[in-house]
Image (cartoon, rainbow, N blue to C red; front, side, top):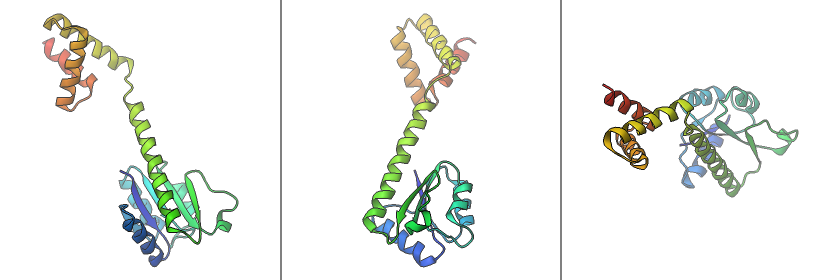
Length: 182
């Protein structure tokens, strides 16, 4: 889940933006007045979106962006003259005065982008190393030899056992090898 943190130097600005997002059905995890507080939250969460103004009580958005983990995106709400020379990487700008429609659409777009990135990371994580592939093949061969299974049946057995035990296939294969070779 992507956390949304609203951070403005003035409490009423933070409250107004937070209320607009909540009324639109989005869950706001925190509202802050300082960049330090934002960084405390980002230390405990994996990813999220920071919606902020140009200046917080203790720092400007550029300083906050430098300290943020790469997994956090920033939505800057400020006058276009403040960022006319361009925005840093990971920062999206919305010009003042802000329109509710633009705010909601931009945040939804950022959430969808983060979801796509999360799915890509999961896809990459599923690729097995050659060692893991070898352990799985050895376990399938042992199952085929000792239990008269076809390769497909052995593979399905590994998958099912993996899902039931809540472990990945290579761990399940390693357990089968350990148990059957005792």
